[in-house]
Image (tube, rainbow, N blue to C red; front, side, top):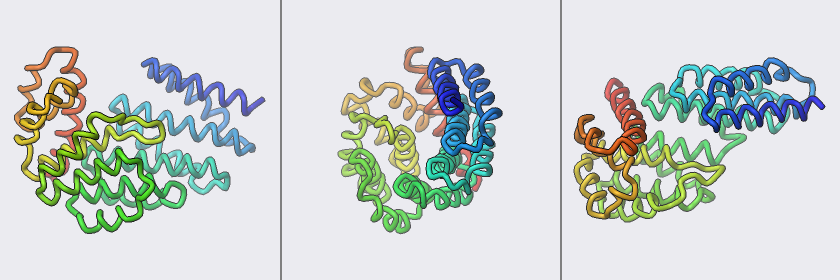
Length: 273
């Protein structure tokens, strides 16, 4: 009965989050955690751990990265050494979420790397994939290539996006964009894998390598400026300045601004290092 009740509360919180009612979702997750986080049954504890992970994701999506990181830290502290395999995997996922959150805003790269390495025993493929991105963003190309050798099972779309980024790092813009074109037209959210963050990382590397203007022109030439309008508008703003966001219609501008804000936040923090 406890297991069923905990699972029902987790599903309720997830549904509320998906509907956009963050306050109610957080209240549900918090009630579940308070009631079941220390339960003697491993499956019930696993559900509480998953609720903490979902709470962190909800906070992250809302823009409250600090609260999200605190939630992930609390999950790892409570369940990181739990003997239950499911709970250990959830703690590993929390470490990866926390690392990704830090990478996306260009902060605490050493901490992000430590979290990814700690997650490798339970989630080796996902942890290593994100470690490659961290190494690419920080210019550690050789380390990234070495890590890439252990990613044979990465989904094809993820491999193509990484390969495109490696081509950018080698100043091969044409080769990079041939690979990138297939990625933009693919399904970025594949359930266990979501490559939307990686798209933004590719754009950051493109600008780092001085390909910003060529990237904007490429989107226009391929007509992806229309098919992927929010992404294109965000790139224009990232390369040419925030004022260019005003050229888009309101429906596109809202999502474009969210992408733009993440890109410029990474760039601003990265330049401080």
